[in-house]
Image 1 (cartoon, rainbow, N blue to C red):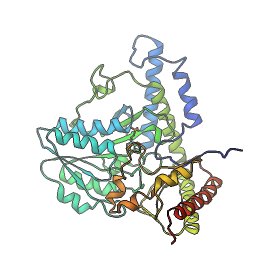
Image 2 (image 1 turned 30 degrees about the vertical axis):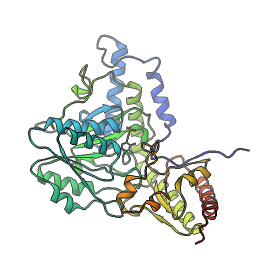
Image 3 (image 1 turned 90 degrees about the vertical axis):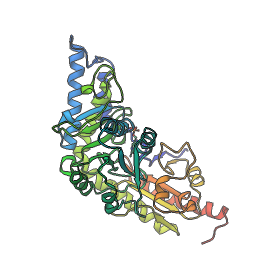
Length: 389
Ligand SMILES: *Cc1c(COP(=O)(O)O)cnc(C)c1O
């Protein structure tokens, strides 16, 4: 009998919820219209569906629907925020600030902007993954255009104090962007109360489809300057041209609605499973430690260093459990995680760390099974490596 597969990599992606899939289906077939077609009912239906999706996403975040620009996902939203603001404001300054533990869809655009002549400060973090707010304050200059800080880290789950950061950037008259790909639908995101100016989202991290996301741009007077990346038909108020992904937008909306309904209960349930997993592993396996913060952390995240156990070997030994050694977006390049390195961990510890990403579909039975299998595999690998604690 084959062992059922267990999915514990919800930071990489999540399954589409059945309700989401059902909501999307008609927009592939019967209601396939182009939302920009103004002359017939097919177009009107598609446009109406897109606006419902926009309202549902906006409702989850407590923001105005018109403040959302639909994109292909958080990578594009991050690119649009960084290039869009920097290029629109290049007469006013040349400096951006971000953090060493950001996702590559922030760090790579920042490096590209450096090639365009911008200066970028990459703030360090402490061993829990938090940046030093005083260091942020000190690095703000009259040339600074934008600060970008992720709301929740995709490897270690550390939550940033966005409200404090926003108070600081507002006082300095600098725009604040946040990559909230991991935070949305997992923890409350009172975007307006925080005062964040731009925020990136992606549906596939909260049980919606892949290939659809959004950038929130606060409605201000005068408008926040933003130069589009993709030009063409002027869709999304000129900020993102291209025929709208109608099923995707419908799905993202439905996923947002489900997330809103379940936010508190699902968060508590997932956090409980995560704590059981950590307790179980700790009881059975010596010499393990948590990477990141135990308090300010995403409910489903656990990142553990198993001393003396190379992570590839552990992942190979646990073929029936989907886990990861770090960000899915960089795992084809066998480089040690830049996030764990930024915590000050040595190379051996970085290479012995595994990310567990629990989600809505996981059960207590799966957690118990995982504890036993990981304990077995760790003991075996340590024996092979000749390590005897
Ligand atoms: C997944 C992820 C992204 C990329 O999102 P896509 O929609 O897959 O492009 C960006 N930032 C963070 C923090 C992520 O977790």
